[in-house]
Image 1 (cartoon, rainbow, N blue to C red):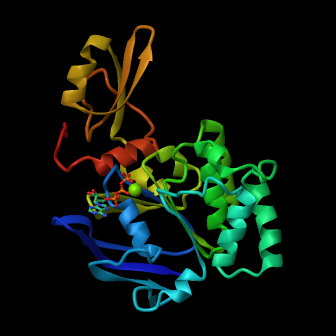
Image 2: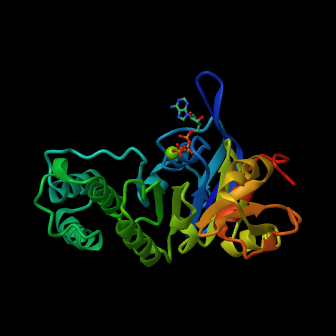
Length: 293
Ligand SMILES: Nc1ncnc2c1ncn2[C@@H]1O[C@H](COP(=O)(O)OP(=O)(O)OP(=O)(O)O)[C@@H](O)[C@H]1O
Ligand SMILES: [Mg+2]
């Protein structure tokens, strides 16, 4: 089971590049695809889900080019698009039955699977209510359930935690870690903490290009010794932001604790601290050369 992305580019009208020479090999596990808004995450996911075609490059699933022969991948694919929409007049049960039929699942198998999935995403009680009255988080859970209908080998979820409240986020993370195993899960987000606990691999995409691909531990190791904290008066925070690459500011009784990324001590008061994945991400995303002290 492998997904190999080789030199994939996507050019939109108006000379906009969604992806540029993007290469990545993925095996079983959870890949967190992290990148800022407009980085190309959804573009990549649409190509992997065979909804869009690349301008250049190839993607193979177990050795088969998915642009030439998409059926093998489609039969094992679960996909939650970023702009997932539901039919407001259907109930979750009806909606999932409809999609299961569209995916070619036979009715008894579908019925059993849908009941399990409704339990899994905590919508069993609400299964006869109309989707039109659902909150954003409830709709998102319907979206996750539909992506799992065919017990996919390749699960692609695009910003699945958008609109979820903190409790739902935690539930979603647990759901993902239960799901991993003999499948590939690709999850895009710009929220590091969404993937921190579950991702076996992190891929960071910036302006259509892959800038890092490593295990979370290795990303952390790469910024070891480059994260510093010290206390400053709150009036000095704006100046600190222009001078340093500030990854966080924490308000204290006697001032503001600034957290800064820098190759060497940014000042006599700065003490080195343990890096977080958020620090590693910010380091990778920052344009090379800017604000380096
Ligand atoms: N259909 C389209 N037509 C033209 N440009 C597009 C289209 N879709 C995406 N783009 C552009 O391609 C780039 C990548 O967009 P994409 O939606 O893949 O980014 P993203 O990482 O998913 O962003 P977000 O975090 O906001 O969802 C952006 O510059 C975007 O404006
Ligand atoms: Mg997107």
